[in-house]
Image 1 (cartoon, chains in turn blue, yellow):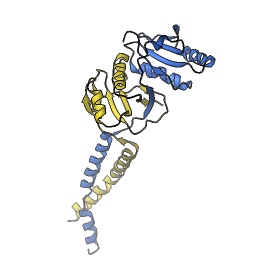
Image 2 (spheres, rainbow over the protein chains, first blue to last red; image 1 turned 90 degrees about the horizontal axis):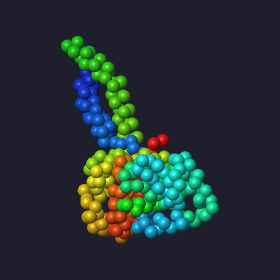
Image 3 (cartoon, rainbow over the protein chains, first blue to last red; image 1 turned 30 degrees about the vertical axis):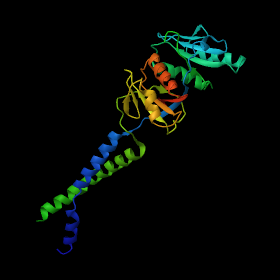
Image 4 (tube, each protein chain N blue to C red; image 1 turned 180 degrees about the horizontal axis):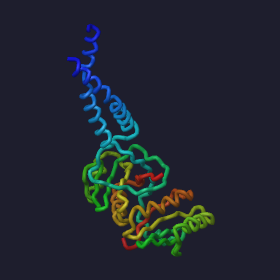
Length: 133
Length: 131
């Protein structure tokens, strides 16, 4: 009987409030924390390069609204353009590389192209405005 | 007398595994997730395979698919952007652009024009890593 008393007092502290608090904390952290992994692209803010775009020293990658790609005016595929750019770079490493998206090309598409370029080791591509923008 | 006591003890003990699991989940979310300020409007950044870690500093510029802009979580218009950037100090502030994947190029260009007008020559475009 006497042994029973301390045991009882231990049980008086109920676990329910603890569980409540822990649950609230859990819900808070589930809602407030994000698991997005960020990655970054360095972009040069383009100067008004409309005149520069006609310059022969630039490898111009044009992105059309329908998903088409042109390197220096020649239509090419998503796989082919990297080779063209690399070939252009191989002949003259100082040539700048510019990506010129049409007005309605979504950012995702631009990022895809820049991604391919970055994978091919071209990290200094700049973004230029199209003539109609 | 004895019956309710026994009952409550067995109840407490039966929730122990639950508490263990909940604690584990709590610790997981605390450590694995990062707490971020909620954004003014939802922005779904483009996905990329880029490996570069974004630098922690710089002013954060939000741009959503409808063209709404927010600098450091306060709404701003394209016209005011330059003045607001100057309010933040520095002559050539470092800007981190968090733009929606659906933003059309002309809108992005308009924002970049405004940034150039404010003396920004480098900006970091934030993207989501997709493996």
